[in-house]
Length: 418
View 1 (cartoon, rainbow, N blue to C red):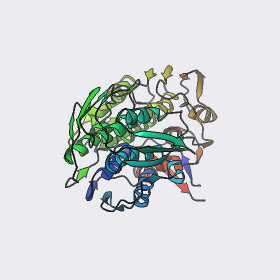
View 2 (cartoon, rainbow, N blue to C red; view 1 turned 120 degrees about the vertical axis):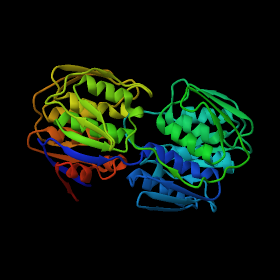
View 3 (tube, one colour; view 1 turned 45 degrees about the vertical axis):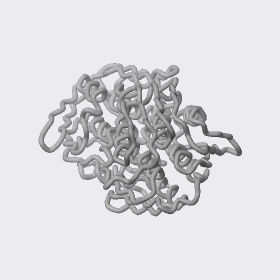
View 4 (cartoon, rainbow, N blue to C red; view 1 turned 90 degrees about the vertical axis):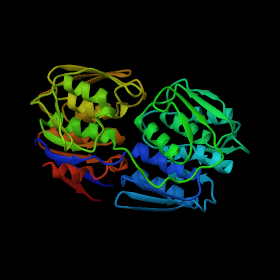
Protein backbone atom coordinates (compact mmCIF):
# COMPACT_ATOMS: atom_id res chain seq x y z
CA UNK A 1 0.00 0.00 0.00
CA UNK A 2 1.53 3.35 -1.04
CA UNK A 3 2.17 6.15 1.44
CA UNK A 4 2.77 9.87 1.04
CA UNK A 5 5.71 11.56 2.72
CA UNK A 6 5.18 15.31 3.08
CA UNK A 7 7.66 17.89 4.36
CA UNK A 8 5.44 20.78 5.42
CA UNK A 9 5.69 24.50 5.99
CA UNK A 10 5.95 25.74 2.40
CA UNK A 11 3.50 28.26 0.91
CA UNK A 12 2.41 26.82 -2.42
CA UNK A 13 2.55 28.98 -5.53
CA UNK A 14 1.97 28.38 -9.23
CA UNK A 15 -0.65 27.10 -11.63
CA UNK A 16 -2.79 23.97 -11.48
CA UNK A 17 -5.18 22.54 -14.08
CA UNK A 18 -8.36 20.92 -12.75
CA UNK A 19 -9.19 17.43 -14.00
CA UNK A 20 -12.58 16.13 -15.07
CA UNK A 21 -15.08 15.36 -12.32
CA UNK A 22 -15.04 11.77 -11.11
CA UNK A 23 -18.63 12.10 -9.89
CA UNK A 24 -19.73 13.15 -13.37
CA UNK A 25 -17.60 10.66 -15.31
CA UNK A 26 -18.85 7.59 -13.42
CA UNK A 27 -22.62 8.01 -14.05
CA UNK A 28 -21.95 9.02 -17.66
CA UNK A 29 -19.87 5.87 -18.19
CA UNK A 30 -22.79 3.87 -16.75
CA UNK A 31 -25.18 5.73 -19.07
CA UNK A 32 -23.39 4.36 -22.13
CA UNK A 33 -25.21 1.08 -21.39
CA UNK A 34 -28.45 2.76 -22.48
CA UNK A 35 -27.58 2.67 -26.17
CA UNK A 36 -25.73 0.43 -28.59
CA UNK A 37 -22.77 2.09 -30.27
CA UNK A 38 -19.48 3.86 -29.69
CA UNK A 39 -19.35 6.60 -27.07
CA UNK A 40 -16.56 9.22 -27.03
CA UNK A 41 -15.86 10.97 -23.73
CA UNK A 42 -13.30 13.72 -23.15
CA UNK A 43 -11.63 14.99 -19.95
CA UNK A 44 -12.06 11.66 -18.20
CA UNK A 45 -9.82 11.58 -15.10
CA UNK A 46 -7.54 8.58 -14.83
CA UNK A 47 -8.55 7.51 -11.36
CA UNK A 48 -8.93 4.24 -9.51
CA UNK A 49 -12.75 4.54 -9.51
CA UNK A 50 -12.86 5.32 -13.24
CA UNK A 51 -10.71 2.27 -13.98
CA UNK A 52 -13.02 0.18 -11.78
CA UNK A 53 -16.08 1.37 -13.74
CA UNK A 54 -14.22 0.60 -16.99
CA UNK A 55 -13.51 -2.93 -15.77
CA UNK A 56 -17.16 -3.35 -14.76
CA UNK A 57 -18.31 -2.35 -18.26
CA UNK A 58 -15.74 -4.67 -19.84
CA UNK A 59 -17.07 -7.63 -17.88
CA UNK A 60 -20.50 -6.87 -19.30
CA UNK A 61 -19.11 -7.10 -22.83
CA UNK A 62 -18.19 -3.48 -23.57
CA UNK A 63 -14.91 -2.50 -25.19
CA UNK A 64 -13.35 0.32 -23.15
CA UNK A 65 -10.22 2.28 -24.03
CA UNK A 66 -8.84 5.13 -21.90
CA UNK A 67 -5.87 7.17 -23.09
CA UNK A 68 -4.80 10.78 -22.49
CA UNK A 69 -8.04 11.56 -20.62
CA UNK A 70 -10.13 10.32 -23.54
CA UNK A 71 -12.43 7.34 -23.10
CA UNK A 72 -14.01 5.32 -25.91
CA UNK A 73 -16.73 2.85 -24.91
CA UNK A 74 -18.28 0.42 -27.42
CA UNK A 75 -21.53 -1.00 -26.03
CA UNK A 76 -22.66 -2.97 -29.09
CA UNK A 77 -21.90 -6.36 -27.53
CA UNK A 78 -23.28 -6.25 -23.99
CA UNK A 79 -23.97 -9.86 -23.01
CA UNK A 80 -23.69 -9.91 -19.21
CA UNK A 81 -25.90 -7.98 -16.83
CA UNK A 82 -24.14 -8.45 -13.49
CA UNK A 83 -22.04 -6.16 -11.30
CA UNK A 84 -20.18 -8.55 -9.05
CA UNK A 85 -19.22 -8.00 -5.43
CA UNK A 86 -15.46 -8.01 -6.03
CA UNK A 87 -15.78 -4.74 -7.99
CA UNK A 88 -18.78 -3.13 -6.32
CA UNK A 89 -17.28 -3.52 -2.83
CA UNK A 90 -14.57 -0.99 -3.74
CA UNK A 91 -16.83 1.64 -5.34
CA UNK A 92 -20.37 2.63 -4.42
CA UNK A 93 -20.94 4.24 -7.83
CA UNK A 94 -21.25 0.73 -9.30
CA UNK A 95 -24.91 0.89 -8.27
CA UNK A 96 -25.37 3.31 -11.20
CA UNK A 97 -25.47 0.45 -13.71
CA UNK A 98 -28.72 -0.80 -12.16
CA UNK A 99 -31.07 1.70 -13.83
CA UNK A 100 -29.52 1.50 -17.33
CA UNK A 101 -29.43 -2.32 -17.35
CA UNK A 102 -33.07 -2.69 -16.30
CA UNK A 103 -34.20 0.04 -18.71
CA UNK A 104 -32.45 -1.34 -21.81
CA UNK A 105 -32.18 -5.08 -21.17
CA UNK A 106 -34.97 -5.70 -18.67
CA UNK A 107 -32.72 -7.35 -16.10
CA UNK A 108 -29.82 -6.69 -13.77
CA UNK A 109 -27.93 -8.32 -10.92
CA UNK A 110 -25.97 -5.78 -8.92
CA UNK A 111 -24.14 -6.36 -5.66
CA UNK A 112 -25.02 -4.12 -2.75
CA UNK A 113 -22.31 -1.44 -2.78
CA UNK A 114 -19.26 -0.73 -0.65
CA UNK A 115 -16.78 2.14 -0.95
CA UNK A 116 -15.92 4.81 1.62
CA UNK A 117 -17.09 4.03 5.16
CA UNK A 118 -18.56 7.48 5.80
CA UNK A 119 -22.13 6.47 6.48
CA UNK A 120 -24.87 4.02 5.62
CA UNK A 121 -26.00 5.71 2.39
CA UNK A 122 -28.75 3.12 1.79
CA UNK A 123 -29.82 2.21 -1.74
CA UNK A 124 -33.46 1.76 -0.78
CA UNK A 125 -34.40 4.97 -2.61
CA UNK A 126 -33.07 3.47 -5.87
CA UNK A 127 -34.97 0.24 -5.30
CA UNK A 128 -38.28 1.86 -4.33
CA UNK A 129 -38.08 4.15 -7.37
CA UNK A 130 -37.51 1.28 -9.79
CA UNK A 131 -40.29 -0.75 -8.18
CA UNK A 132 -42.69 2.17 -8.70
CA UNK A 133 -41.70 2.04 -12.37
CA UNK A 134 -42.74 -1.60 -12.55
CA UNK A 135 -39.52 -3.48 -11.86
CA UNK A 136 -39.65 -6.67 -9.79
CA UNK A 137 -36.79 -6.60 -7.31
CA UNK A 138 -35.52 -9.12 -4.78
CA UNK A 139 -32.49 -9.00 -2.49
CA UNK A 140 -30.64 -12.30 -2.53
CA UNK A 141 -27.26 -13.19 -1.03
CA UNK A 142 -26.09 -9.57 -1.05
CA UNK A 143 -27.30 -8.83 -4.60
CA UNK A 144 -30.10 -6.68 -6.01
CA UNK A 145 -31.83 -8.76 -8.68
CA UNK A 146 -34.17 -6.72 -10.87
CA UNK A 147 -36.42 -7.66 -13.81
CA UNK A 148 -38.87 -5.67 -15.92
CA UNK A 149 -40.48 -6.28 -19.31
CA UNK A 150 -41.03 -2.54 -19.78
CA UNK A 151 -40.51 0.19 -17.21
CA UNK A 152 -43.38 2.67 -16.97
CA UNK A 153 -43.29 6.35 -16.18
CA UNK A 154 -44.53 7.42 -12.75
CA UNK A 155 -44.12 10.09 -10.08
CA UNK A 156 -41.30 9.55 -7.61
CA UNK A 157 -40.63 11.60 -4.49
CA UNK A 158 -37.34 11.36 -2.62
CA UNK A 159 -37.58 11.97 1.14
CA UNK A 160 -34.07 13.40 0.95
CA UNK A 161 -32.25 14.57 -2.19
CA UNK A 162 -30.00 11.73 -3.37
CA UNK A 163 -27.45 12.23 -6.14
CA UNK A 164 -27.01 8.61 -7.22
CA UNK A 165 -30.71 7.92 -6.65
CA UNK A 166 -31.68 10.82 -8.92
CA UNK A 167 -29.15 9.67 -11.53
CA UNK A 168 -30.26 6.02 -11.45
CA UNK A 169 -33.96 6.83 -11.77
CA UNK A 170 -33.30 9.43 -14.47
CA UNK A 171 -31.34 6.88 -16.52
CA UNK A 172 -34.06 4.28 -16.06
CA UNK A 173 -36.79 6.76 -17.02
CA UNK A 174 -35.30 7.83 -20.37
CA UNK A 175 -36.29 4.47 -21.90
CA UNK A 176 -39.48 3.94 -19.86
CA UNK A 177 -42.94 4.14 -21.40
CA UNK A 178 -44.59 7.44 -20.54
CA UNK A 179 -43.50 10.31 -18.32
CA UNK A 180 -41.57 10.13 -15.06
CA UNK A 181 -41.45 13.01 -12.60
CA UNK A 182 -38.78 13.07 -9.90
CA UNK A 183 -39.63 15.37 -7.00
CA UNK A 184 -37.04 16.60 -4.49
CA UNK A 185 -34.37 15.65 -7.01
CA UNK A 186 -30.68 16.35 -6.46
CA UNK A 187 -29.46 19.56 -8.15
CA UNK A 188 -25.70 18.89 -8.22
CA UNK A 189 -23.71 19.95 -11.32
CA UNK A 190 -22.79 16.29 -11.85
CA UNK A 191 -26.50 15.42 -12.16
CA UNK A 192 -26.84 18.23 -14.72
CA UNK A 193 -23.85 16.91 -16.68
CA UNK A 194 -25.40 13.44 -16.83
CA UNK A 195 -28.72 14.91 -17.98
CA UNK A 196 -26.96 16.88 -20.71
CA UNK A 197 -25.28 13.67 -21.86
CA UNK A 198 -28.60 11.84 -21.96
CA UNK A 199 -30.21 14.73 -23.86
CA UNK A 200 -27.38 14.60 -26.42
CA UNK A 201 -28.29 10.89 -26.87
CA UNK A 202 -31.89 11.82 -27.65
CA UNK A 203 -33.49 11.75 -24.19
CA UNK A 204 -36.28 14.20 -23.34
CA UNK A 205 -35.56 15.78 -19.96
CA UNK A 206 -36.86 19.02 -18.43
CA UNK A 207 -36.14 20.76 -15.14
CA UNK A 208 -32.63 19.46 -14.62
CA UNK A 209 -30.83 21.51 -11.97
CA UNK A 210 -34.11 22.10 -10.14
CA UNK A 211 -35.91 20.01 -7.52
CA UNK A 212 -38.42 18.67 -10.07
CA UNK A 213 -37.17 16.74 -13.11
CA UNK A 214 -39.54 15.54 -15.82
CA UNK A 215 -38.48 12.76 -18.20
CA UNK A 216 -40.50 11.65 -21.20
CA UNK A 217 -39.43 8.17 -22.23
CA UNK A 218 -38.22 7.43 -25.77
CA UNK A 219 -37.92 4.14 -27.63
CA UNK A 220 -34.15 4.29 -28.16
CA UNK A 221 -31.05 6.42 -27.68
CA UNK A 222 -27.97 6.95 -29.83
CA UNK A 223 -24.41 7.83 -28.77
CA UNK A 224 -23.53 11.53 -29.20
CA UNK A 225 -20.53 12.59 -31.29
CA UNK A 226 -18.60 13.29 -28.08
CA UNK A 227 -19.09 14.65 -24.59
CA UNK A 228 -16.64 16.54 -22.36
CA UNK A 229 -16.86 15.85 -18.64
CA UNK A 230 -17.25 18.95 -16.46
CA UNK A 231 -14.32 20.06 -14.26
CA UNK A 232 -14.11 18.56 -10.77
CA UNK A 233 -15.47 21.21 -8.41
CA UNK A 234 -14.25 19.31 -5.34
CA UNK A 235 -10.69 19.13 -6.67
CA UNK A 236 -10.88 22.87 -7.38
CA UNK A 237 -12.22 23.50 -3.86
CA UNK A 238 -9.43 21.36 -2.41
CA UNK A 239 -6.77 23.50 -4.10
CA UNK A 240 -8.55 26.62 -2.82
CA UNK A 241 -8.25 25.19 0.69
CA UNK A 242 -4.58 24.37 0.09
CA UNK A 243 -3.87 27.96 -0.97
CA UNK A 244 -5.89 29.32 1.96
CA UNK A 245 -4.30 27.13 4.63
CA UNK A 246 -0.71 27.48 3.41
CA UNK A 247 -0.75 31.22 2.74
CA UNK A 248 -0.19 30.32 -0.90
CA UNK A 249 -0.94 31.92 -4.24
CA UNK A 250 -2.40 29.44 -6.73
CA UNK A 251 -3.87 30.05 -10.19
CA UNK A 252 -6.58 27.45 -10.77
CA UNK A 253 -7.35 26.73 -14.42
CA UNK A 254 -10.46 25.00 -15.70
CA UNK A 255 -12.77 25.35 -12.71
CA UNK A 256 -16.35 26.63 -12.87
CA UNK A 257 -16.72 29.15 -10.06
CA UNK A 258 -20.52 29.15 -10.36
CA UNK A 259 -20.47 25.57 -9.03
CA UNK A 260 -18.50 26.60 -5.94
CA UNK A 261 -20.39 29.66 -4.68
CA UNK A 262 -20.90 28.35 -1.15
CA UNK A 263 -17.23 27.37 -0.78
CA UNK A 264 -15.92 30.64 -2.20
CA UNK A 265 -18.19 32.77 0.02
CA UNK A 266 -17.04 30.94 3.16
CA UNK A 267 -13.40 31.22 2.13
CA UNK A 268 -13.79 34.95 1.52
CA UNK A 269 -15.12 35.21 5.08
CA UNK A 270 -11.94 33.42 6.17
CA UNK A 271 -9.81 36.11 4.51
CA UNK A 272 -9.00 34.36 1.24
CA UNK A 273 -8.65 36.63 -1.79
CA UNK A 274 -10.07 35.55 -5.17
CA UNK A 275 -9.16 37.23 -8.44
CA UNK A 276 -10.79 36.29 -11.75
CA UNK A 277 -8.23 36.44 -14.59
CA UNK A 278 -8.20 35.47 -18.26
CA UNK A 279 -6.12 32.41 -17.37
CA UNK A 280 -8.31 31.23 -14.49
CA UNK A 281 -9.10 31.89 -10.84
CA UNK A 282 -6.26 33.17 -8.66
CA UNK A 283 -6.55 32.18 -5.00
CA UNK A 284 -4.40 34.01 -2.44
CA UNK A 285 -4.33 32.75 1.12
CA UNK A 286 -3.96 34.99 4.20
CA UNK A 287 -1.10 34.69 6.67
CA UNK A 288 -3.61 32.95 8.91
CA UNK A 289 -7.28 32.26 8.07
CA UNK A 290 -10.12 33.70 10.12
CA UNK A 291 -12.40 31.19 11.82
CA UNK A 292 -15.66 30.52 9.95
CA UNK A 293 -18.64 28.29 10.77
CA UNK A 294 -20.02 25.92 8.13
CA UNK A 295 -22.96 23.56 7.81
CA UNK A 296 -22.95 20.96 5.03
CA UNK A 297 -26.07 20.91 2.89
CA UNK A 298 -27.25 19.46 -0.44
CA UNK A 299 -26.22 21.53 -3.46
CA UNK A 300 -26.15 24.53 -3.76
CA UNK A 301 -25.24 24.51 -0.07
CA UNK A 302 -21.76 23.87 1.32
CA UNK A 303 -20.71 20.43 0.00
CA UNK A 304 -20.07 17.57 2.39
CA UNK A 305 -17.16 16.60 0.13
CA UNK A 306 -15.37 19.83 1.19
CA UNK A 307 -16.01 19.53 4.93
CA UNK A 308 -12.79 17.65 5.80
CA UNK A 309 -10.58 19.98 3.74
CA UNK A 310 -12.21 23.03 5.32
CA UNK A 311 -11.66 21.55 8.78
CA UNK A 312 -7.94 21.16 8.08
CA UNK A 313 -7.86 24.82 7.06
CA UNK A 314 -9.79 25.85 10.21
CA UNK A 315 -7.40 23.88 12.41
CA UNK A 316 -4.87 26.71 12.02
CA UNK A 317 -7.39 29.57 11.86
CA UNK A 318 -7.52 32.54 14.18
CA UNK A 319 -10.42 31.77 16.53
CA UNK A 320 -12.97 28.98 16.94
CA UNK A 321 -15.14 27.53 14.18
CA UNK A 322 -18.16 25.24 14.38
CA UNK A 323 -18.59 22.64 11.63
CA UNK A 324 -21.92 20.83 11.39
CA UNK A 325 -22.22 17.74 9.16
CA UNK A 326 -25.81 17.09 8.06
CA UNK A 327 -25.31 14.72 5.09
CA UNK A 328 -23.39 11.71 6.42
CA UNK A 329 -23.46 10.50 10.01
CA UNK A 330 -19.90 9.14 10.11
CA UNK A 331 -17.85 11.78 8.37
CA UNK A 332 -15.59 13.00 11.17
CA UNK A 333 -13.12 10.11 11.05
CA UNK A 334 -10.34 12.51 10.04
CA UNK A 335 -10.68 14.33 13.39
CA UNK A 336 -8.61 11.77 15.31
CA UNK A 337 -5.82 11.99 12.75
CA UNK A 338 -5.81 15.80 12.76
CA UNK A 339 -5.57 15.69 16.56
CA UNK A 340 -2.43 13.56 16.20
CA UNK A 341 -0.94 16.55 14.39
CA UNK A 342 -1.84 18.97 17.18
CA UNK A 343 -5.28 20.15 16.06
CA UNK A 344 -7.67 21.16 18.85
CA UNK A 345 -11.01 19.63 17.80
CA UNK A 346 -13.90 18.29 19.85
CA UNK A 347 -16.90 16.43 18.45
CA UNK A 348 -20.40 16.10 19.81
CA UNK A 349 -22.87 14.28 17.60
CA UNK A 350 -22.78 15.80 14.13
CA UNK A 351 -20.96 18.96 15.25
CA UNK A 352 -17.21 19.59 15.46
CA UNK A 353 -15.74 22.55 17.31
CA UNK A 354 -12.36 23.56 15.94
CA UNK A 355 -10.15 25.85 18.04
CA UNK A 356 -7.44 27.14 15.76
CA UNK A 357 -3.82 26.60 16.75
CA UNK A 358 -0.82 28.50 15.39
CA UNK A 359 0.95 25.43 14.05
CA UNK A 360 0.34 21.75 13.32
CA UNK A 361 3.16 19.26 13.71
CA UNK A 362 4.00 16.47 11.33
CA UNK A 363 3.06 12.93 12.38
CA UNK A 364 2.27 9.50 10.93
CA UNK A 365 -1.46 9.42 10.10
CA UNK A 366 -3.88 7.12 8.31
CA UNK A 367 -6.46 8.01 5.66
CA UNK A 368 -9.94 6.62 6.33
CA UNK A 369 -11.80 7.81 3.24
CA UNK A 370 -11.34 9.90 0.11
CA UNK A 371 -11.93 13.42 1.46
CA UNK A 372 -10.30 12.61 4.80
CA UNK A 373 -7.20 11.82 2.73
CA UNK A 374 -7.31 15.29 1.20
CA UNK A 375 -7.65 16.92 4.64
CA UNK A 376 -4.56 15.08 5.85
CA UNK A 377 -2.62 16.21 2.79
CA UNK A 378 -3.56 19.83 3.57
CA UNK A 379 -2.56 19.32 7.20
CA UNK A 380 0.74 17.80 6.15
CA UNK A 381 1.47 20.68 3.79
CA UNK A 382 1.04 23.28 6.56
CA UNK A 383 2.55 21.29 9.43
CA UNK A 384 6.03 21.71 10.85
CA UNK A 385 8.22 18.74 10.02
CA UNK A 386 7.43 15.43 8.37
CA UNK A 387 4.04 13.79 7.84
CA UNK A 388 3.51 10.26 6.53
CA UNK A 389 0.00 9.43 5.26
CA UNK A 390 -0.86 5.74 5.05
CA UNK A 391 -3.62 4.11 2.93
CA UNK A 392 -3.55 6.75 0.21
CA UNK A 393 -5.37 4.42 -2.18
CA UNK A 394 -8.39 6.41 -1.00
CA UNK A 395 -6.74 9.55 -2.42
CA UNK A 396 -6.07 7.84 -5.75
CA UNK A 397 -9.78 7.06 -6.05
CA UNK A 398 -10.71 10.72 -6.38
CA UNK A 399 -7.70 12.92 -7.23
CA UNK A 400 -5.77 12.60 -10.46
CA UNK A 401 -2.01 12.79 -9.78
CA UNK A 402 -2.51 15.06 -6.77
CA UNK A 403 1.05 14.53 -5.54
CA UNK A 404 2.50 15.56 -8.92
CA UNK A 405 0.30 18.66 -9.07
CA UNK A 406 1.39 19.68 -5.59
CA UNK A 407 5.07 19.17 -6.44
CA UNK A 408 4.58 21.52 -9.40
CA UNK A 409 3.37 24.14 -6.89
CA UNK A 410 6.51 23.81 -4.76
CA UNK A 411 5.47 21.14 -2.26
CA UNK A 412 8.05 18.63 -1.08
CA UNK A 413 6.29 15.28 -1.39
CA UNK A 414 7.43 11.73 -2.02
CA UNK A 415 5.27 8.70 -2.83
CA UNK A 416 6.58 5.74 -0.89
CA UNK A 417 5.94 2.49 -2.75
CA UNK A 418 5.33 -0.74 -0.94
